Image 1 (cartoon, one colour):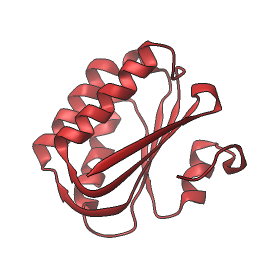
Image 2 (image 1 turned 90 degrees about the vertical axis):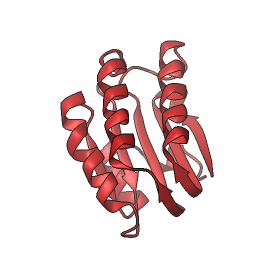
Image 3 (image 1 turned 45 degrees about the vertical axis):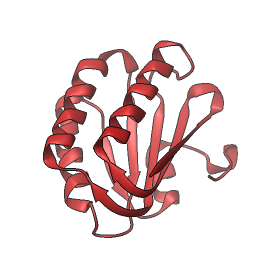
Image 4 (image 1 turned 120 degrees about the vertical axis):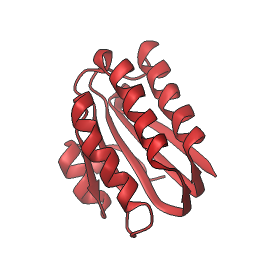
Length: 135
């Protein structure tokens, strides 16, 4: 599996896209990369993140992985401002885990919403899609 990350608007907006088999460790690596980029000033406080999971073939993630994501967000989320995450998902595969992540994210005060369309995600995040190029 691969995760691509692109940063837009001088660090205000991040687009991630995952392909193939999605595994927990790859998600953790991506999160720590975002945290590191925020600490280095590459990503601004309160950046918006859209994570596109529409090209995932299968999920190799369990509830303990989702719990670890919550722990990471609780431990490192305070310094990232009003970060928001929009997750694009167009199938039932993985929906239960993504819904669980959304519910648990309330504790870390990082709003998470699930969308089927990129336009709906952009609208919720307050992102003008004309300012970015598509992945």
